[in-house]
Image (cartoon, rainbow, N blue to C red; front, side):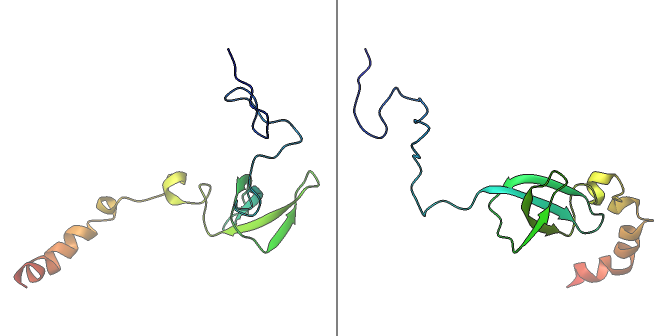
Length: 109
């Protein structure tokens, strides 16, 4: 047996609100919208939803004008994701060279 309570949120639990109703309060939520992120190192662009503040816009290939956020690096240019990252132990023995040169001095202090 369902109980019906008249009002803005009337309806069974978990039911979507009526299309004309907006259950969110005004003025307390961030500006969540689609944003274009561009990697400045290689020009890679991707669009996702975000609350990030932007000052610029960009016109996309499909005609939409979206806020633009510039990144220094992304997964397309970061050495870890591209497979070009070098391990500290594989850098020609630099760690061993450092420990031989300064290892005993650091322990003496």
